[in-house]
Length: 73
Image 1 (cartoon, helix red, strand yellow):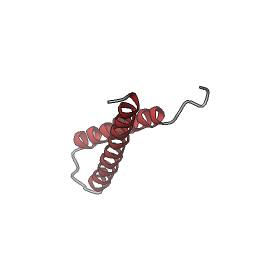
Image 2 (cartoon, one colour; image 1 turned 180 degrees about the vertical axis):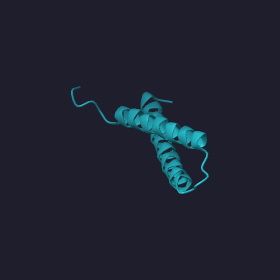
Image 3 (cartoon, helix red, strand yellow; image 1 turned 60 degrees about the vertical axis):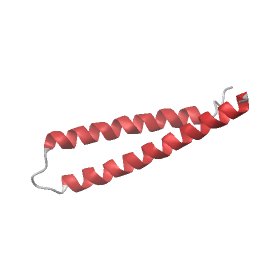
Image 4 (cartoon, helix red, strand yellow; image 1 turned 90 degrees about the vertical axis):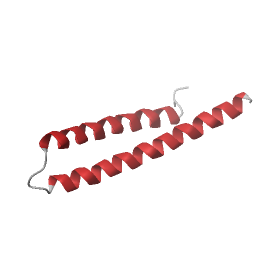
């Protein structure tokens, strides 16, 4: 396996992971929206879901910054 192959494989894996995180973030958003409409919502569960969503958002931002070439380089 050449260095180019390794770079391409890593890039593909990062893009795939980014796609998975975006889907999970969107799904959590849907679940949170539905739960907030429920009068008997479990507030602890809602807070945990929101925290998880924020963590995923941070992971997405980190991955995107890795995928975008440094403009100062």
